[in-house]
Length: 325
Image (cartoon, rainbow, N blue to C red):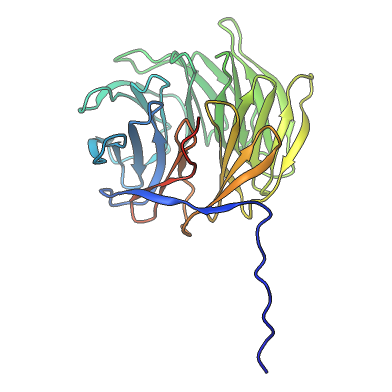
């Protein structure tokens, strides 16, 4: 006897296929890091084979712009400066090296090499004013750098209270506060000062914290291994949860707040991508992506495009929003 027809369960929110815009090929090892420039003209990728690339993304014919090779060390993290001139890359090797490149011309130039960490550099970010770099990684330590052209770099601050690897970090808009997400099941807030930088608050979670982003000066978003996004009220001495956003079916790997502050983009294993309306804290759209095993994601500043690495060394870019006002 044939099984009865059962209606297919539908999501409680709109779902839209994400259009593949470009497939970038050239690396021979698994793509391990991806980043977009703030002007949306460039995309950087790094691979397990120790090769990094800068791609022309904003042109009509996207393609390779520059190749970055650093002694065969795999790339674990990448970040562009807000002015789109600098690219910082973190090593995936035990040497904890960070490289700073000037990518304003078609031939990328070495600017500085920052040393002092131990283990892979798994998180990087520039301050909004372009003056500071924050790094975190397998040695559980947040470092703040003022890169000097041609120098090896000495950290401006070394902050050590995490007890496991740092997976994500973000600067606040005021340039003087950094949030970190760690496998030690905490997010932490740090206050930066020329005299003495200190830990401001510890935000405990029930599972590993994989992603972090400032919504605004009073709200922090965290994404966890437990598939939940939490919005934290930072106006009190001890941050409190003011909303929990659920819908992901795997760990939340990336959080990004669009430049207009209206939308939170989240990407989780699968991958699954959501646009959250920050006015209602509800899903505006779920973008359907082809199944792929990766943990390297990046989103353009306006939240319109998602780039992700592939196991065979490619980078796929999908459109995950219509043109925003």
